[in-house]
Amino acid sequence: MSDVAEIERSAEAPVLDIDPYAIDVLRDPYPFHRELREAGPIALIKPYSVYAVGRHVECAEVLTDHTRFTASAGIGIQDIRKPGAFRIPNRLLENDPPGHTAIRGTLTKYLSPIVIRRWREHFETEAARLAERLVDMGEFDGVTDLAETFVLKVFPEAVGVDLPRENILAIGEMRFNQSGPPNELYHRAMKRAQPYLEWFENSVQRKGVIKGSIAEMLFDAEDRGEFDEGIASNMVRSFVGGGTDSTITGIGHTLHLLARNPDQWAILRSDQTKVKSAFEEALRLETPFQVTYRTTVGEVSLSGVRLTPDTKVGVFLGAANRDPRKWADPDRFDVTRDTTGVHLGFGSGPHICIGQMIARLESEAILKALVKVADRLELAGEARFRPINQMRQLDSLPLRVKKS
Image (cartoon, rainbow, N blue to C red):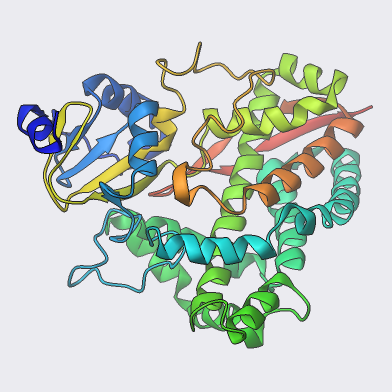
């Protein structure tokens, strides 16, 4: 059957009159995710006139097929090509092949497994120091005292950008709220970030990066003509945004799930090789980046549903990662479950997260360090979530540990 014939035979998308960016939905997105999956392979979200996919198969297809679903209109809900929403695109994330392929290929040389493995010893040393200190405290916050402290110590040193805590957290909150509609969260985050915008712009330029770092190597590569002018700064900006908040959030979710499931903590205590799968399973179950967007290229069809041209498609990664069509008992946290390369927590297709090896190395270092010295991990209070348009993020995670 030809593409035209398939489109002509396709049905219209069902309509959901739900706001995915309402505060109550952001705090607990899973009822919405279930309704989205059950509505069909794709639905129209009425408040914003955008499509949404929540099943694993369709989410992977939209992320993978750039000929029908482009990233060039922006990975947020706004179409950055249009008046009033225009901004300079992220040259890695908001760029389709072949242009994207060329940039990513060059970038991969500077983020090779060999380069990243050199950081392991330093990550493990810092993780061991922090874990010992936290266990001696007995009670601590898993977000501020562990995840943020560790990531904002080792990541800037590795990549080569100075990232003061208050500055980068404000910038991150702005960036990930900008991906959603201009709601109250968006405006509040923009206001909070205003004092740090000049600092952030300067920090991702050549004069702001650390000598001998990967960031400086990217600027050197640009000087040699390996990148077009302006790409190096654009890439460093991407590293800062994607390499801090997402990893902090993923580690926080892993700790939260382990504290709520002592049997799973016991498995890690008896077999530390399961630390890697614990992090992957946490990314599946509590996906940090909940949604990303593509835009239809012309009139296309997806799983028998006709889609209008030039329309945004929200890919709800958090919904796909709990799709019962893909996972047995999808709401259960199981550190023995093999999800690496299958869950969509790092995305899929040509834009799959280029920094995933760094995130995995950071999480493995700090989680192993804690498992080695803490016999028990439990909640010391109620975890609080911070509503952010694009992310599922913990705000506070009171934990209690008992030393081995």
